[in-house]
Image 1: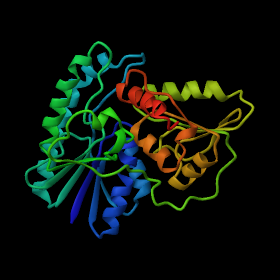
Image 2: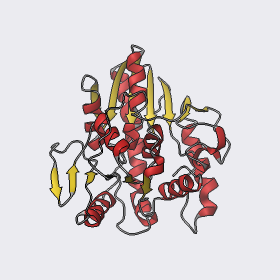
Image 3: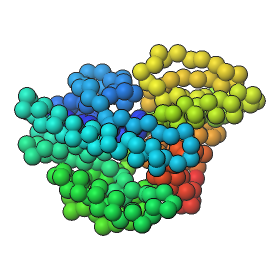
Length: 316
């Protein structure tokens, strides 16, 4: 088959968790075409240099600098809705121009079309609302469900038992009729892991939407620049020049390939990152969740919930 894989560009996580799916499709002999933009596009280009990649933008979003993202998301909502409609029309035009058998969309709402078998992938069937807006959670769930039912299938990257790794996000409400759990996904699954990289006591991975990505990077540099141990800081910018820089005992790199990052994770005493779901799946695949210190993006309710859920689950 000829298959279009389209991860959302809100951080690297949607792209990284598509890696095992893309690898399997290639192994099965399918023709895979990728659609993304920004850092995810460059990440996928480095992972799959032989694949065709179409650059098409996701929904433009900018977070607030403070502890609440409600105002920022309301401000961004018109652009998000326009982006959904734009990508839906873009896909229709693409399907008029060339044939595809399947589209796999990771959290891109508009990548469905009656001309093609369309799959929507998400772990966040429900949307965690901030304090004061909890009564809106069932409404947000129903709206999301309407989008999901536009697709032929909904893949949930988690297990159905005992709340899995996503907890309420995919287990609280009844599943859409087209939804199925496909198991957790990680780019580290099936890898032959190299020798441990024990050079760094702490590994910090920066990710997410600006300006919060940069705020976290600056706070981590301030935290560790005078430490007595060595720290590796990965800034999550794969399209930047891959050059090491230093700030005291902190080694700063824009990006690491899977083998290098897994070796650093396995050899570190502590791993600090956002509590994004893809990061949680990656650390679980390496049996490194017990090393994790999660710093949720302020006001991002999904990450705040997942950080507490994983901690209370007794995994960390």
